[in-house]
Length: 156
Image 1 (cartoon, rainbow, N blue to C red):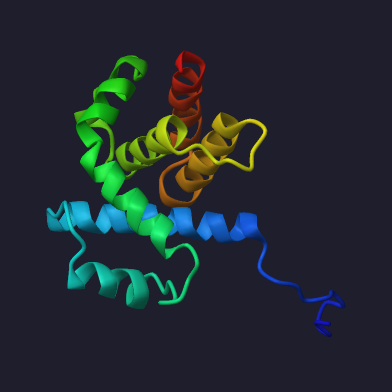
Image 2: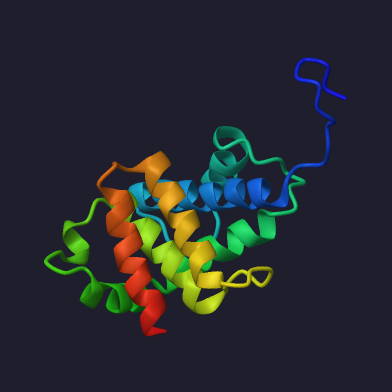
């Protein structure tokens, strides 16, 4: 029991844990793009992941994080082709780096690896992407991300 707030301590919430894993994916994608890297993991990625992002070396989500980073990078051109027609007056190149990465990551997860535990996987992915936009982008990004991914979800 946590005496400070009177609550019973429990194992980490799986949704919170997946949220942290998604944040690590986005942040690692961002770092790798800034460094101009793609492909295999480098020692810099391990440093970024474990030391800067503070993902424990025994974290259960490490395979997911690594798989998603590789897959989003490998599929970037294909994902951009799926996203571009939904941007309405924008181009992929005009998007901020973080918004482009959020859209790519969410599109990949929605199209290729939807959350199995969800009744509505598209809605779960969209909510996660909006949450990432809230934390890592601007207030204007949240409805934009919602609109683009909502259209993608309807078209799949």
